[in-house]
Amino acid sequence: MQSLTDKAHHQIRKWITRYHLKPGTRLNVKDLARTLEMSQTPVREALSMLEREQMIERRPQRGFVVRGLTLREVEDIYDLRISLEELAARQAAKRLRNAERKRLKVLLDDVGRNLDGGDKSRILELTQDFHLIILDASGNRFLSEVGKTILNRIWIIQNINILTTDHLLLEAHPEHVRIFEAIENGESRKAAMLMKEHIGGAKRFVLSRLNDSDDVLSHLIMGYQQ
Image (cartoon, rainbow, N blue to C red; front, side, top):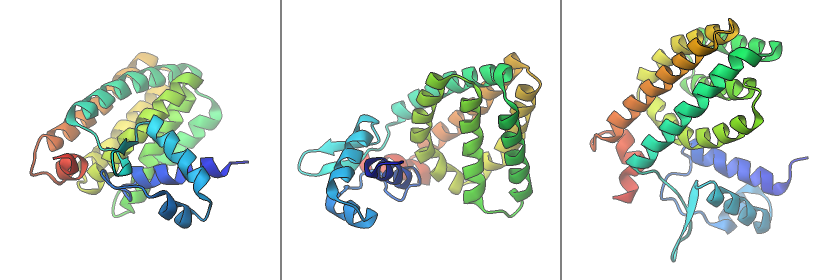
């Protein structure tokens, strides 16, 4: 059974990754406890967990604050993500189980049906699930755990990036289909190459937006630090 601390940790992290709690936002333990309908103790424990995950930070006179990312950190996170998911795709091509194959196929079919005029938030959630399933399909528990921690940081950027432009959302689906086909066919080298190209393209696009001080993504992710 999930503990109150785990529930608080999951919900607060979700609020951060979905941008309901923006970078620079002060986190008041009392207010969070009231919203979550629990005592302050599990909330404090959850905030300590999020601090260790570097999603929030303590600031003098302000307490816990949602942590943003510098341009260098964004680049470093994407580089690490490329290495991890390239390996995950390679191993998934060798270890894919039937249940994961079915989940990926159903997910991709769902995205395909919703691309034209569908719920963008739902499509975004499905595309993120695609990467999570491949991490699990690698059969490498350690890789999956580290990869999911990294993706929690990426989602903060990706959620805003996708919701403020259709560019990556439209390009991602056919790329995901090709990655899945390579994994399904056991083509480990091809799957790894396609995953590297896929995430590398996303990295270049995001960095180009963050380097533009007039871009809304740059303002939302890093503007609070200026």
